[in-house]
Image (cartoon, rainbow, N blue to C red; front, top):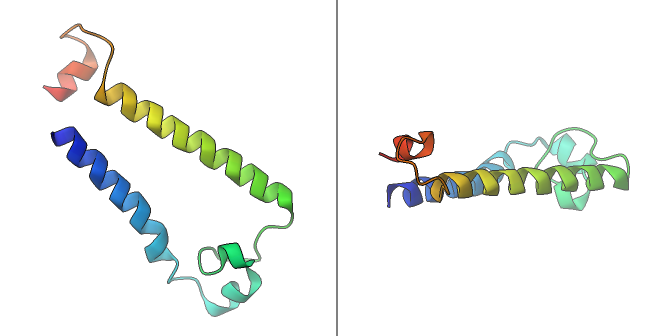
Length: 90
């Protein structure tokens, strides 16, 4: 039960951070950004469609890596009680 609470907290914080930082972007940066990114980032914004493709690929890889790491921690396949994952849970 404790692990589920920690995972829930991480998900809530991950969803809350982009919302809280969107209020920080200045007015000049908001005018330079495309509609999709207005109020989220500073600077001039993406130069081409390749930037969106690269960032999308990085997001997919990062989300999959986080999912795989959490899955391995929550349900370890090792049954040995001396394994490091079982020591952490105990």
